[in-house]
Image (cartoon, rainbow, N blue to C red; front, side):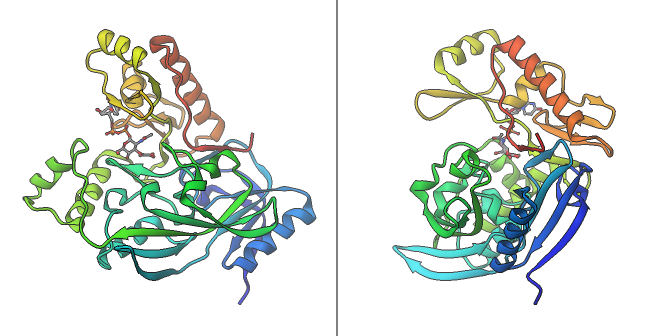
Length: 342
Ligand code: EPU
């Protein structure tokens, strides 16, 4: 079997969920570890950098890329048995995240249900430590298998070494060093439901469910996301474009006094987390549009491409939003997806 398909001067539009048009010097569909290594060798020969895209759901391309863009398409899910009361399972980097979540629930391995319908591949999930509806990925990760491009060897990085925090990890700090090949998870054998995030219980009751199962929570999360967040298959986007800012509690209480309806959540290390969507909506950006780049009508945290927006046009809106929020509230919004091509 051919392990890698190489395309010269490839259009990246189908490979990023923003649907931004840009070209890559080379595009490498790598179907195996050997295919990945062949793509890395090509980059070395051509003396260009490597960009790993995964599902392309958490990046914004702002220019053509003089790079080998690698799409890791490693597939396979391996059940590793029960250890210390948890079901262990390893999923290859190219598995679709949502399909994997559905598979775990069908196997009665629980915990990932609140993370249903997040776009992207398994291999990208630890990079930004995906999280939704009160659950973050890191609590289930045992280890991440990767190829370390610096040491030129395969490695296994255990959970503690992944440096996970809110939408952050070791892999984000050093984006081009590790090529993730698989992730091992430890899941619950019994339901361990997290229903406290606003809207989850309401969705379950609206469906007439009084005693929820993990599958019912999975369905409820899918329903909430479908209602609130735009589907990248219909309108280009990369989910939340900014992180919810972490500020010290003093600033949070000053803001709370000035803006009583601003949602504020307590966070680790004496910090408070502010709802970025609220800050952006307050500044009047919700539903705004400049040419084909805009802010989603239902959720101010999500930038959208109505068709032909360029990465630079989307980035310009993001920078304008950052400036307005900073002027209004004295809070700096941090961009969440990776900006590629700068
Ligand atoms: N809000 C507004 N206006 C808006 C959007 C939100 O006032 O336009 C307010 C809401 O009313 C609510 C608060 O902001 O009180 C929080 O909104 P929401 O529950 O939609 O969650 P979020 O904090 O905006 C985060 C994640 C999402 C995740 C949801 C649910 C980040 C950066 N985003 O959004 O993750 O789905 O919580 O858990 O942490 C993603 O990372 O791509 C993503 C979609």
